[in-house]
Length: 430
Image (cartoon, rainbow, N blue to C red; front, side):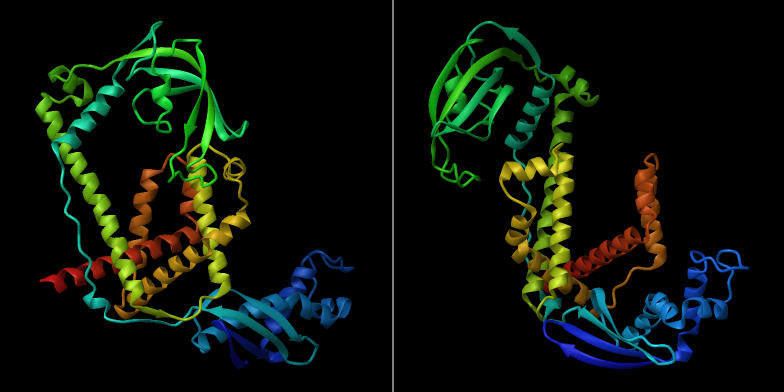
């Protein structure tokens, strides 16, 4: 096998691979065997006709065409390994010469992982933020627990602050209802701040069945730019009104919440839970800041377009999963935000590039530090995951795939890299 390499722009390269006739006989025989399963040869059962018989029956040119993919699969990995290439994505294959009795020649164009240079990553420092818990934080959680165990009573009086009410409403801009600006029997706790500022206040004092219209101006920083700072008209009708009676915070309440013996014991556990949650969030923020700082030290060549497209697809699949968890279809979500998949790809392109640069910078540290994950480590992690989802055959099937194994290995390697960066950052501060 002969290989000629030509490096192209934007981290691409092209290999011209020449395979001698003596190297392709095995692929030709496999192709003949496959064709014999679909082409009836008199005197032979399907899949049983010998190679020479098939060559006479269909011609060596036909066998070469059938064998070409197998020849590429057998030779291209060796060519890539010989040239010490780190490719990104699937190569583009073009046959150049495919004639009986002659060497097989094909071109393989592929994107390469960009060269990455990182500097002084051992001396990265990122400040950790102190995690503090106040009595107010604990009190807010206690209030949330009270609301979860609140007693609701249907009343006939006017709506008051802290009541839960059900409303029908329509929000219009220039007499045209806005997308997503309508609801039937929409539940609202008055004074909770669920709705746009000024909305809930107008509902206080209304009785069941009462209707009113009023103007409502959206905040200047509202996420939908077409509504930010705009004056709209609201038509609202009051439905059922429920008075909420919160349980008293005493030892009986503590026992009902989680079999705590006293309110003080409950508050202590609440404080510890908040502490753990905030420390976890700070760990995640700190690790993200470390990777960002690492990426800023990195010099990365042009990103191959197919890598960017692959990252965009990954981001879109992540959005699909998030939308599904919220009980929506992707079509409804896109319709609500008035955007297409192509629109999101255009908006996300820069962010996809940044995510790729972070991944490449982390990967380079794993190379520099000789960080890897053994098969035993991967299998141990997969065993833990299987144990947690053993009642779900579909997820177990996904976990058993080679793609999921590779994904798990990559996640574990990244975790090891981040752990190493944290160790460097800690030692640097001492």
